[in-house]
Every structure is written in C-alpha cells, then in structure tokens.
Image 1 (cartoon, rainbow, N blue to C red):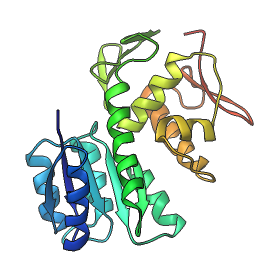
Image 2 (cartoon, rainbow, N blue to C red; image 1 turned 120 degrees about the horizontal axis):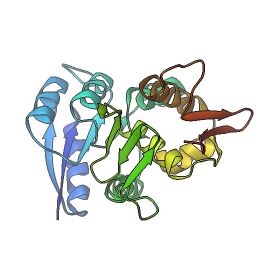
Image 3 (tube, one colour; image 1 turned 45 degrees about the vertical axis):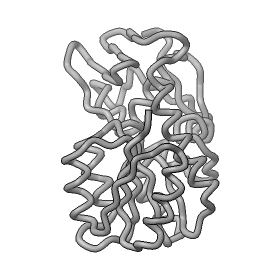
Length: 231
C-alpha cells in the first residue's frame, strides 16, 4: 500500500526532486510551498509522513512541527534545513521531529531515512510478541499506541510512546542515553544525550504522581534509565 507524504518546502526545485524520489518508494506526494498552507493541508488531510523545511514563509517548520505533534501525534516528521548549527538540530528534535537532515543531502540517504521511519511506524505495534503491556496501574496498548493510567488516557508524543514501550517491555534493563537514541531515534546521534533527558523528563511529568519519587521510570545513576521491574 502506498504511503501519503506531505512536503512543505518553499524551494520548488528541491520539492520536485523530493517528490520524484519519494515516488520511487511508492509514495503519493502532496507539496506545499508556504508554511501556513502546509499546516492547513496537514490538519485537513491524512498523511503517513511529513517532510518539513525549517525556514518557510508564513509559518516556520519548527512551529508546524510543534503544532502537528499536538494534532497528529503518531505521524512521523522529518525536518529538512540548510542550517547545520547544533542548536537547530536540537530544536528540531526537542520540538518533536523524528529525524533531521541538513541540506545538501544524498537522495539515497533521504530514501533510507524515510524507509526507516515507515518501518519503525509499522513494527512498533508489537514488542516481544505482546500487544498489551500491563504495569501496575498503567496499560500500554501497542497496537493502538495508547497508554492509560487508572483508565485515563495519557497524551504522549510518538517518541514518548516509543521510549515508554521500550523501557516497559524490558523492566529492570538499564539503557544508556546513547542506546536509547539509537533504538528510538533510529540513528547515531553522538552528543545529543540531553535530548533523551528532555523526553524522559516530559514523559515522567505524564506518568509519575511524584516527580521527586518516580515509581515507573527510574534512573540508574551514571548509566541511563530503566523501567521499575517491581511494577
């Protein structure tokens, strides 16, 4: 089945090049050259992937990403930008992007990243053959990508859900920050462990009753994080 991709890119030459090579992956492509138009299309229609340029007229890509994470929390987002400073990459990831590519990039790398995002979306629904995880008062439905606490649904971003699912599927196992980057983000990102810290902190706000005494997501000091195996 073909995938629907929305490209929000104001450079028509780049947008057409992306469209051409995404069609090689059996993708149906929609293009918007303005950030505001792109955002309106994104929330009006259904897509399997968003490709967002950072510097856009009307509304920048980071703002689109931020809003889409609220409106379409389970759809992967790939940021594209000509800016290569570390702060821009951090902002993209912190805003909720699943991946980040700096122009110029190779078409083969782009296709590999896109296929990786589709693959992780398709396979995340099952972990170790289980579709529902029950951890004390928390229920994680891997098929529906839904988490409830005492019957109340928690609104998690895709990355928060994947982090929680990974940790809860292997209670007691400590994962280093770099290991979590590799498993959840799907690629090496040396030096960006603070991105994991930020996502863990936001996840704890949503699942822990007392942030000073977490019960579910524990810190293994000097190493990383683990899910409480007593739950």
